[in-house]
Image (cartoon, rainbow, N blue to C red):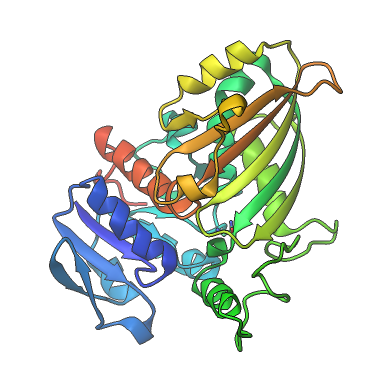
Length: 336
Ligand code: 2RA
């Protein structure tokens, strides 16, 4: 497969190469793609040096697949150009996620919706991906009526600038080019992305809209609070669910344990529960602290953790590419 990695020099781009290598994705030709200022740089992949190329050069190369992690504006401008030459784009930005004509895919949940004519496929937001991996089997079994989600999101979700701010502050310094309005070291900031007219942040509304789209159920009532925390191993989420139908904890546990890529870590008596420290560099979604919400009928609480740069971004995108390849949906000579 001829593969372009767009945003190759970014934080997620670097993890993308790690995941492609670990998954042994069948690459015959690799094109690292970045902004003009990085064109010509050399990047190593599996012991071989590759030259960073421009967006236009990657379009002209007519790749089979282009995996984007380059921000929404770049994706809005360039994804259609790749698609027009028959390249399948898997995009990590929010640009296409809520487009009614684009699929928003978490392979464990809804990959079956993909077809050979899908030329721009949206990778959901990291906090949505880990959430719906856990919710999907429960929604099918007990129908979710309402969700209340609080997230504890790694500063790595904001990118290199935030990592630099955290490391400067951890060393006792003050960042000259901070990613956040306030210090992130030894702090929690209830502000991920920008505030909207309804006083929620974009990050919180992504959870609302994307979850409904992926589960294909606009009736689910959802509210969220997204918090940035000084943690680098992954995103954590406290999830409160009200189901339409009764459930048992045993049935919930059994359903979750049957999900590929989901690990139940839940034994409070042995202090067993998911933590970002243990999730870092892993591809799985970890679920624990399963317990009935005794304040309502059919209520469940759970705790969901995953590495936001891997399953929350790079791994999910590579898994979409693997699904397309395994089902003969990549490289089909269908141009848009
Ligand atoms: C964040 N979800 O954590 C966003 C970016 N992927 O900031």
